Image (cartoon, rainbow, N blue to C red):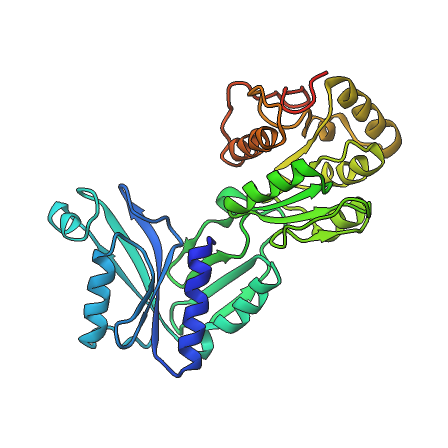
Amino acid sequence: MDNMDLQVLRQVQQWLDADQRVVLGTITRTWGSAPRPVGSIVAIRSDGLIAGSVSGGCIEDDLVAKIREGALRLRTPELIRYGVGAEAAQRFGLPCGGTLELMLEPVGPQSAIGALLERLSRGERVLRTLELASGAVTLAEPPAHSRDGADRLVLSETQLVTHHGPQWRLLIIGAGQMSQYLAQMALALDYQVQVCDPRDDYPWTLIAAPLTREMPDDVVQRLRPDGHTAVVALTHDPKLDDLALMEALRSPAFYVGAIGSRVNQAKRRARLKEHFDLSDVQLDRLHGPVGLHIGARTPPEIALAILAHMTAERYGVQVSGSAAPGQASNAGCVL
């Protein structure tokens, strides 16, 4: 869920608190090119006021017109389609032949919007299941291994299942200058960022990425990395970095990286194997030196290389210049 959709849910709750009737629309399928991805939401108040977007505006205009005409006085969820055929596609601002499918649901106490927002405020990821026959909603925690196809929107004849909350998380070990750049860039990419550094002499000022002074292994265990989590160790201190890596490499985290030269990476692999009993398969998941080989030297350049590599891993793209599993790339320290 991106920040725009989170803002929509907050607006929906405000309208409900003011005793306003609301219809929530969720994109369930698209054919051809569509302005917004599957899972995006829009909310329409009974007087036509709108929050969010599912198109360039044409579909929203049609929904508002239907609301004002009383055509959407729904009692249970209803599936509608826009843009079937070239003429309709042109009318609704979709590419020729494009189609957009929306699930419209009347929002009320059964919709669990307040409970959903409460969980999201704690940084949780939430599985929301809408029963199409009744409009009732249940909330649950997604499986820890959930990633890619496992967390896409699922529409059946009886249910609509959507995923909410921070889709991607980043744990940074170390509160140095490079971590500041990495955290800021990751926040811009809608990561939920947590920073860990037990050393008191490293101050931290980025409020949006909270700092904890706990030990790194304890933080990783508490975080319970899943297939949407990256762990990047940047302290240059083996006593701290290794503690985080030994836990992260045993987890389903989609990306685990550590700064350091090739020589130091080889020593790290030997330590993790000897003292922490990590297998070769687990160690081969370690990206170190961390990031793509783009000639990065300065802290912001290295942060850029790290996030570029993380992005490629998220989408399963083999990028020219990236290291093979267990091999070193050249971002960061290369001596």
